[in-house]
View 1 (spheres, rainbow, N blue to C red):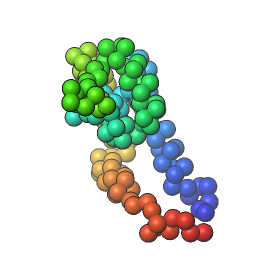
View 2 (view 1 turned 135 degrees about the vertical axis):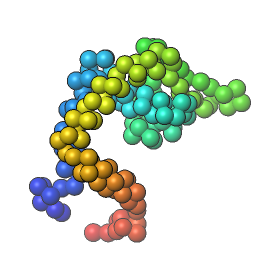
View 3 (view 1 turned 90 degrees about the horizontal axis):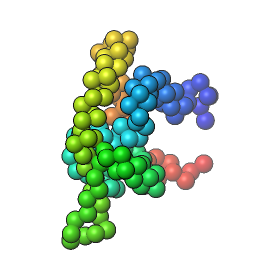
View 4 (view 1 turned 90 degrees about the vertical axis):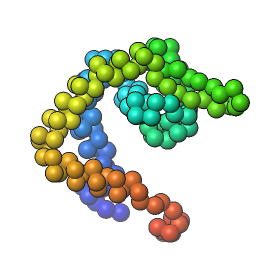
Length: 149
């Protein structure tokens, strides 16, 4: 096992905490959690998403997603839609109020991204994003030594 100072997972978590420090005050000021903002961002891009797909894309476990969506629906930010031909499916979409909230918050978020880019440099930020995309494509499983000691 690598030394603690060379831990990939710990470094990724610490980097996440540092970057979220740029955004948490904005989200808090608007009464949003990080998870709610992730959901809003996905729904802005994809308009309507099925429950499981939304959970997967936002990295929120389905049991947690249920509670988050219930609160967002109560607050008028999202609608849950059920197709008539399959009542087991649930699709999520933003309400006009949810879209308005995105329009209010996103310029502040964009400014913070600009602040990060100014500190890190455009080139380094692009490199970081490309590397993170590569990490997300890594395959986990038996062929990588799963189950071996």
